Length: 321
Image 1 (tube, rainbow, N blue to C red):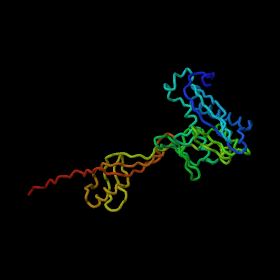
Image 2: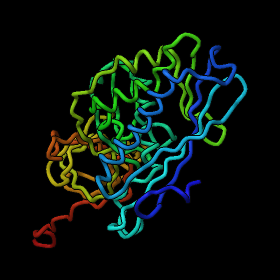
Image 3: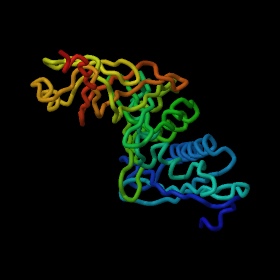
Image 4: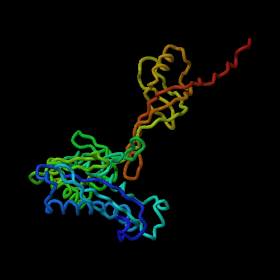
């Protein structure tokens, strides 16, 4: 039992998953040890490599197994048991400790907010990414991978692991039993549900995958901003670009068609020099390696809340004879 393990340090994190191999050769619940042993050792090495990469010597992990017989397949239950060394006070005191759950998620053995390594490898099908862009989606930092017209959203750590030749070799060993005659499918499962599955074709592609050399670029995602801007040039007919002053002179699209219609029908007074209280959409901004903008974003006015015409100059000759 876990309580009897001779593990140093303080137990802090534990996750459980099932790895399931299936096919005609496994209907008797028996699996060739020459196929199983390298896969099991490779999975343990993957977990230890990720732990060492992100935790260093502050924490250790042990992958425990328990055979679990299912009808016409061979599956093993794994427990990733993590301890923090005594010199580290606790997981709560050190938020930078990568947990067992995160290790499984980044590898793609557990489902996370975005694809883990195994899911990314399955999608890439042995292909090298054409472009990798770090961005934000649904509040999570993610990597957008473009490859031959396909787009995948992966965890940034999965992209880092994709650059490690040893980790790719171990990933290939985990799926290698699928390449044998009578071994057709591999699944990662949790709580009775499939997290990821792999066919023979997937296993071949993972075996052929080479470490990525593509350096990711970063972008700030599209955003909105409320601001007061000054009209420098208005469009009195049609939907051309307006010129406004916001930090500097900018050409912007006027997307508030309701306000634009009232302006062009002279129902709104806003000549050049007027101030507009607006909400603007700011396009994504690509950043260089030092996180400096590569180019200026595009701005669009999506809502005009109010307009303030320029002050009128008094006629100094009014009233004189």
